[in-house]
Length: 97
Length: 283
Image (cartoon, rainbow over all chains, first blue to last red; front, side, top):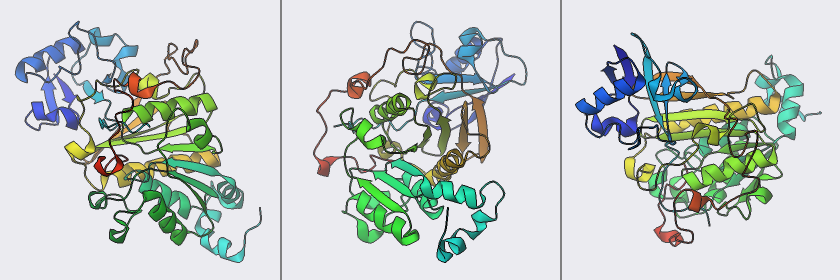
């Protein structure tokens, strides 16, 4: 069992839940099982080709999975997964002249 | 560095503080810090920087004060609604500390003027709220060799970090190589933002900017602080330098400023008239 921290921006898919309990042996596993429970949750995390989107980071404990084994990074009981999307604003009106 | 009697009294608690002292206070007086955005993040950041006696404090913002800004943007008063933000910011900051030279830049930051605006400053504080300007400020800081103090907020959560120039330490592009597609991430104007949140993140940014000027302690480089107000939880994760980063990697491909709207999937030249702009263009 791992803990998965859901950022505010994705909590609309989890009924407002901030921390979920996940299961699986790899990050991909955990995310897939969560997607089954909360359809749409990982749409902006995993691409259609099964890779990580480049505007989202996933951490196992305090390490970026890109520098571990990406989505194949193994997880063990007690690990904490954090999902970090770019929320640098996101205003669609261009601010640059 | 010599201080007037008033300055000695004003800065007394810093002058006796191990880690600052008279030498450190002198560094603050000599420092030039630029705050991009006189909004939610820029308000507390600029107010603490002014109170600390930063000698030259630049403020960049094109917008006017809107009533919906006031629950979090403490630089501005109710009577300031409709005024350019840089004007009310300058007044507030000089009321706080008349020793500070506040330089206002009432303009939209773009690839055409970023080097000119950022050039005179030692440290850059990023308080913007949109991706094109984030990437622009990141790249300009890296190319100019200036440290960038990053902060961003959304609803109840915020994040902060320091991006030092050069290789070996990560920049914003190492963290997020690409922006999300337009329309997939709501702005604070659409998603709301807890008013106290920028006070916390902006204060972390002021802390890091002052530490950089002083050379005190360890900068928040290579780390990202995440704050969740609802769970009153601070989390720190490690950021890695990406050797393939187009700006700070081993073989940079971005060696001058680019078209950041195109990079972010936006069409250039579609900026609406000022009156129709989202009031929360800066955070």
